[in-house]
Length: 116
Image (cartoon, rainbow, N blue to C red; front, side, top):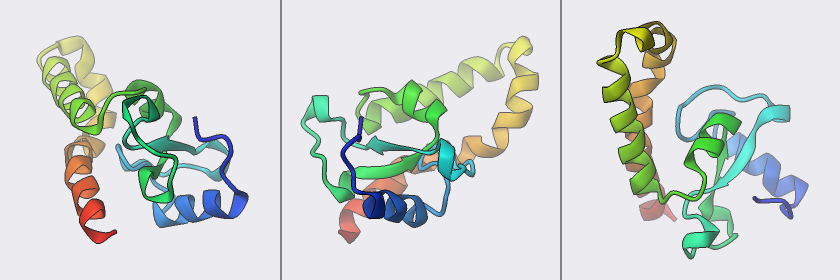
């Protein structure tokens, strides 16, 4: 958990992320956004600015301390399972718009690493 982040840094993370969850792309209200360590602290990630992203509570909860590559595989596998199960199709109708973005967060993260 990123509890000791200065208010200005928190605001910058929110604005730099375009007020969207880094993983699913959903717009996140200020009161509801969380900050995720892309590389979890439990896996050697540091509490530094370029390891923080704006995140919705759902994605942050699901990701937990998974490394980003593992989370990417998990999300992709989840979509495959859900698409093949008729009872999940209605749920995916809402979620599918964001599904394409989910598979792009790994690319987005790699581009961030190159930039800074």
